[in-house]
Amino acid sequence: MARPYWTGNLQISLVSFGVSLYVATETKSQISFHQISRRTGERIRHQKVLESAVENNEPSTAVEKDEIVKGYEYRKGQYVIIEPSELENLRVPSKHTIAVSQFVDRADLNPEYVEKPYFVLPENDAQTESFNTIREALLKTGKIAIGKVAFSGRENIVAVLPAPGDKGMMAYTLRYQNELRNAADYFRDIKATAVDEDSLGLAEMLIKKMSTKFDLSKFEDGYETAVKALVEAKVNNMPIPTEEAPKPQTGKVINLMDALRKSIGDDSRSTKKPPKSEKEPQPGKLGLVKGQSKAPAKRKSA
Image (cartoon, rainbow, N blue to C red; front, side, top):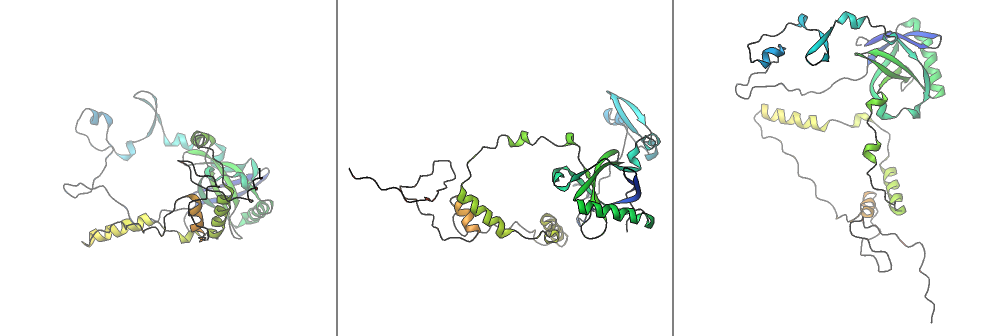
């Protein structure tokens, strides 16, 4: 098992026990590229050099790693140096403790808040009883613990909840409110339209037809597969794979209603021109035609 990314205490009021956080994701890409000189075919190396040497077009040598420190530019071209030890000694309680400040319903944790997942384990066997008790309590109440933890150069909001299955917990770092763009700035210009009830019903049928239990293992990175095929072709002097031509449509879809019917396999209703008694679609519209709910009234004789 990998080494823990962070180890400290999970504190809920007067209850405190040791936990370890492990990064729950990893890069699985099989293809990685290097920068190469087109002229010589040699690999490009980047060196850290003094800015003044670059600006003055002077010969420069690489700056050694132990000479490089962090600096904050408080005025144009002027920096205050921050030593690693000074950052390490910052007085931030959440460096060593996840202090839970509140509990929220699972429904309150919107997906756009979530940043990165971590596995949460008891730090050692002595912490297991407290760990399992809190896990079971969260499971039965359907709540999520919200707190803060400091690592990766910032204090993170963190959500802690039971992991799927019967063991362990998950922690998710969350984005701050000011890191999320205002959705209204993007959605406000979407034109409001009436939703046709027949189309809505067909859309619901399509969703039910395509509904299944989510299985992440069914998905693979098609782009990486294509890149791998390209690399293998070039290494072995084979023809370069080309993009497959799109398959022809099985039938012409003239409006949303037709598309929905064809998607659910219902071709029972034709797409012939509607009778004059039905409303003709206006130019630029979807061209949906509602079926009459009742027969038209008979005209009275004069």
